Image (cartoon, rainbow, N blue to C red):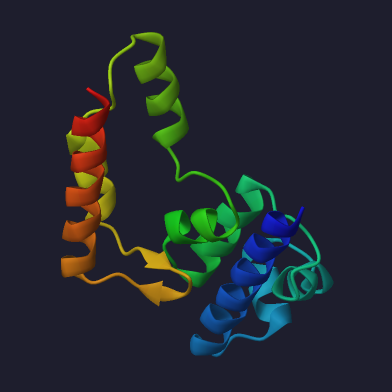
Length: 134
């Protein structure tokens, strides 16, 4: 429960920041995303857990990275769930290329955008962990 609250608070802070950076009112964003402005205000305050569909609608309206918002809300980015299930069914590890593709996106951790150096370090760490499990 506490972990979910952290996700909701981080998601809400980022949502508000994106909205304010784009100089949008709650009502304007609500119109663009086809949501109520009071619901968006509650999301910004970390009161509700948004669905994937809600997050995608907000990302589109804000012209923001939907995967970043999905991760902040505690979801896996689009596609990775299907890839993980497929990989586990085949008893094969996920392709390294998939992780590299994910790392080409804008990624934030604890509200701080990762640099290319950080992403390369993360990739090296994951490769090391994978090699240790072999």
